[in-house]
Image (cartoon, rainbow, N blue to C red; front, side, top):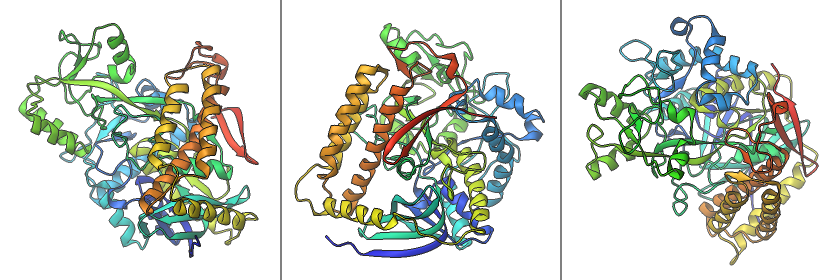
Length: 552
């Protein structure tokens, strides 16, 4: 099947129209660059921030004082600690030093960052200690940022999935995209690309495996940026690590720290020591300190564990309800209403869900990756709305500086790669028989869960890697797409298989147990690996791993 290619040229290509992509595009356009956002969905309602958020991690000197190191030290004690420990100090400091400016900028654009004219901090903090997360009303943040980009002249191409980067070790030359409705192929020629394609979902089974879309992040967030970056030779790190999230059992939604209640056992006893009564200022930190407490209570026959908001005043309950709506929990609120659940009278069962992928594209504090002209921001490199906003903004600045000194170029292997991608797509579209994307995705999920799940060993990881590679060979020539929508799902599955393979390889290299990463054959945490990250990259078609000091 012959595919026609539409050619489009731009200075800066923002891959993904989430918080990071929009902030990068706005900043780059302000500085004079021609900018295109290619978004798989629709920027107004796409990405992890699509339906809202109510907590923004930030350091505000007028509120926190001038000791930024004390603030960072406090954050390392919270759920942020597990994620921050994988980042260098310069990245963390740059993040925080720029966070207040972004808060003020968003507030000026119409995203309410204050309550009654004052900064309101709550959640994600221990009682009596430094408050680390600003409460804000982020329900309309995506439409507002989209409007800011459009009024500056940013070209937004909704429903276009960028699935392959073009270039080499010398730099980015372009990218290939697919129209998710018409099935047309688009070649972007660009001087620089900014990856902000979000989280990794559908690599492991969800808490309700039959409902593949029941995840805390969007169904379409499949680590596309990480996979593309890996294929072109960029460095990734800690792809074998994951965390978990806590919330309403089987109802995967964000807002862990939005809940103002106490976590209790069936006898009404608090399972932690931090709070004993509901409090709108503090969430129960026990489920940030110890995500495995749910499993232990279940195994010991002491569960279930309940979130108890009973005792809140009418005004406090209104505050909680508004926060849940700002966080995007509209469906959850409607479910409570339909089922007659009153949070002032009823406890709600809580649990953990989702293997939250911690692997990132390696970058420095300037958002530069190991490939010249390739930048990254958001869940691809850090995490959280705050990180996406700050580093999205900074990546727009860095990309604009970079393009001043270069011209458009073509990589030596661009033509070969384009033909290879065209052949792959034509094969998917022309198959009248073969494997459905969903079958392929489910096979991958169960392979990861069975062989690289909660407990791993060299034997299981080796067997799982071998099995995944057999599956991959079968799929390379037999994935079937009957329409453009299924074609996009097939391209996502292709990216997930790449990430699954390097997850096994990195897990074999990490000969220790650390956090939620457990190896039965190496049950201890190796102190010689403290302060190090495990780098993996594609070199001449082969995965290469390297332990490296985080630096700074």
